[in-house]
Length: 113
Image (cartoon, rainbow, N blue to C red; front, side, top):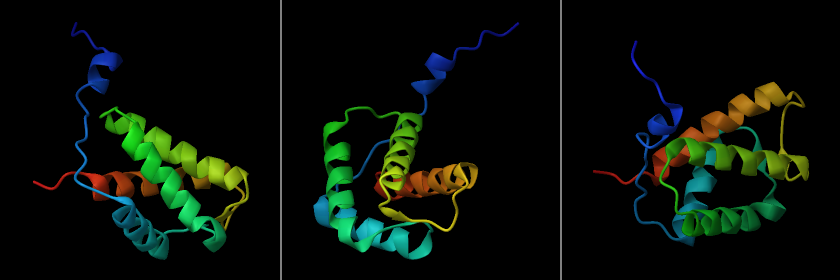
């Protein structure tokens, strides 16, 4: 029987981010929130972008799964505080939306070869 280890698998799914700054983060979220629902409310958009920029700058993990969890958690936190404009109250639907958004965000941050 083959040996399986989830912890070893985590180290195989690394992501390498390209160069970014606070303006590129703001531009990225402007584009993302134009296409996806929910959207961060206008009055906290700058704060959201700054929070995300600080998170990306200070986190030293390269694991894509950890990043997806962090981004999803950040979106849920903003939702709990009432800073997202959502079309649903169903957490299952939100979880799927946030997971899709997290994947898109990671794709945009990923270093292009």
